[in-house]
Length: 607
Image 1 (cartoon, rainbow, N blue to C red):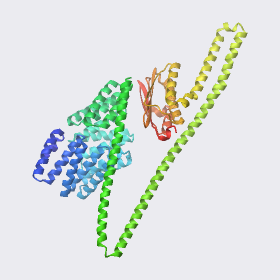
Image 2: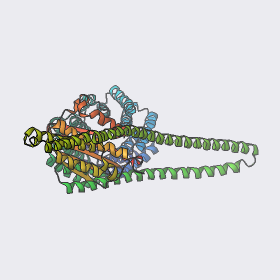
Image 3: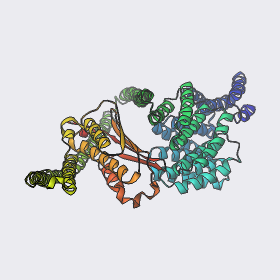
Image 4: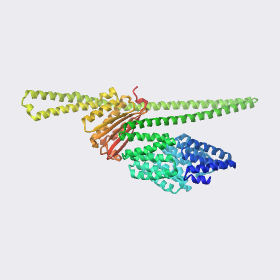
């Protein structure tokens, strides 16, 4: 076992052979502790290999042996490892349950020094659930206990996880400082995983800062550690991170090569999440390379694995609920049998039986009352959330109706007022030319007629943009396509329009908001970007619509967005907030890419 445990730091396959031999020797000697310990170590090896079902079966065996011995110290470690197992599978509610079991057992064993590991796991789980304050609370507890016990490895893990939490809170400076402190400690331990994970996280942070050379430097070392450990799951994370760097630097062929490597590893280890991420990136890379057929193929795979992951999570949830239901059924059967025995024993004690039945009835009524009250509260909460959602949409609708009425009034005034006046002026000039024979020979006369003609056309085009009839009649796809085509014909900016998925109709206010947003972004390109080409892309998904606008202009500094009022960025973010949309802006001297996505709430569809 000692030999196998040491080998785990260098080669898991070799360690597994030695540990399985230890398990057989323990069984032959009927050594309960040896059987439990070897099962624990074998479970850790399979967890590193991402074979979670096999790992769980060995942890269950270990728990049985240590429970029989009453060895709470080792039992707590098994429970903590099981929590880690569920955490790696994104089953966070089960992870919390096992971590809390570990806390309870460690308290019985008086193992205060091991509480740091459990608090670290709980804090990390809350970080994944987006509950940052709870995450910080438990991770700080883990840090304090680890410092008190001079536990360098656990302290490094706690600091690394604190770094991830701060990164999720967009506090990147604090995140980077904690990660660098954790890395110094991790490199002085025998742990093969932690130094890799910290370097991977640091690389991600540098990518966010657009410091791609620094990110690549940390990734190269992370790749070396992943290859040394022989853990394909970690190598997959490295290659996905490399693809992010080359996608950001627009070295799309290199990004594609790393994504192909990611797909190969994800298929080999059966990582649907890895395939989902890789094909999502490939979709964007193929699109940037103009490989539209391959982009569509990647999009189909992306949707396939997205649906598969969602179905898998639902199936796991249903299985868990079924298990809990079966457990409750067995408990109920046992309770019924016990109740029958009690009835027989109390046949001669009618008064006691009356009291027992009265208490049971009161408890039952109390439980029923509580359940009814909880159900009513839950129903009220759901109704309130739905009403609030409807009110938010109504408020946005009212705001946009007001804006649109003003646009309509201006468009009509331009078309019927100024446009009519300019048309009349042009007719008068034509008539004047016929009445005064010398006028047609004068160049200034012809220039005046040309200016009147251009002004009339400009007024009509402006009125049309303010009041897009095609949007109301044919929908978002046709309106955006027509706008891009007309804009390309009338300006020096060439616009490529792309659409994926089946176009659907949304309510007028949502479609109008998206149309106006695209108009404003294209106008920004013309006014500020000094670009020659632009791309407008719509993607219609089952539960989401995404909009991408890219150009090959001079770009701008995204860190100074707050001062760029002229670009309409504040207006863009206000629209996104109103419809719960997300916007991602990436800009460099080689161009700007703005990616917007909305979850298509049922309230947004046409009734």
